[in-house]
Image (cartoon, one colour):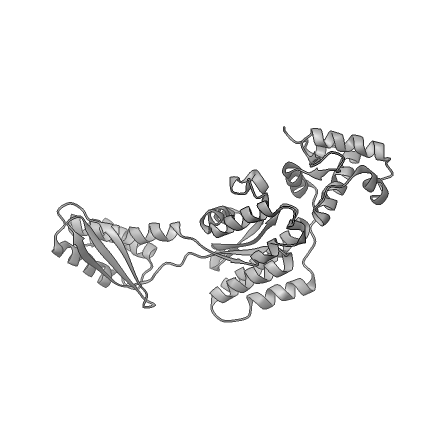
Length: 347
């Protein structure tokens, strides 16, 4: 059922809808017409409020989890509220100070990212998330060790002294001398470059006729570089802090949902892909419940914002994950402020 746009709702319907959503986000429980009449100051009778709530339910914006249990917003209703009615609050001075202190504590950038996720977790009472920039190895030395007639072990030594191995398929008829030639080319011509920079230089030198490689050696160099690029893109690094915040008193009757969410957090690759989608936005993104198939069972929400390095280049994403009844008005600007703090650190 298509939800009624905010602009097509009557003033009375908007008022009742706002009260129901804001009450749910505070308490996590449905609210009844009598309570709305007593607490909202709408000057409407319980009967009038019930009629409006029924109309909102038929429009797909509210739902009654149990008979006579009052109403709560659906995920469609939450999306409509977040996009069209929510008024955000600026982070308090204390919240800003906590974020700045955590992000700017000095030391390696990785520690600042961990601190950012921990601070966000503490302030939002959710789990904090940071998608870390993909770290490409800087080449120092490269070698091929023959395994079989059609496979070799590619050995990469990074500038930081790290050593990584990958099995690479060999072109038909590859000779030992071709393996040596390809390894020497990478070690002498491409040392000091990241993998993407090495691939770009290889392409440029081949285009200018400067590569001085035969066809087999050229193919080996390309395969040797590409296997790390593909592998690195498939294993994004996700920092998660504060999972215990997802287990509070309000989850006692909803343990299956929480277990599902914790399982999703363990499967970091899927959530990393979801967060990666926020890299392309210029502002904070909100993913609510089953809008994304990953959260169809857990009914969770993610608020995420990209952070940038020099020249405005997006390098990662910071955010929080929690139940759909997040305090969006408070957490959205908090995540946005954290993203700006990290961007200043990266600049």
